[in-house]
Image 1 (cartoon, rainbow, N blue to C red):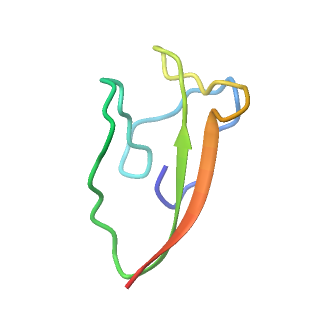
Image 2 (cartoon, rainbow, N blue to C red):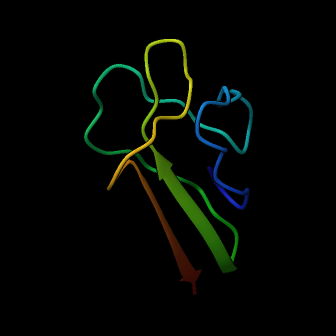
Length: 66
């Protein structure tokens, strides 16, 4: 998720401009972000895009683009 809250466990992660889905095992991605502070949430989901529970399944960071 880009500048969006992480999804509650058990809920479907939508696909839109803020919710990017990487279901093909991608190991990297490029994002075009505007200058300023952004939050990124990396969240594991099952094949039907339901957010998974468990240690390490959700990571959230804040970054600053200069």
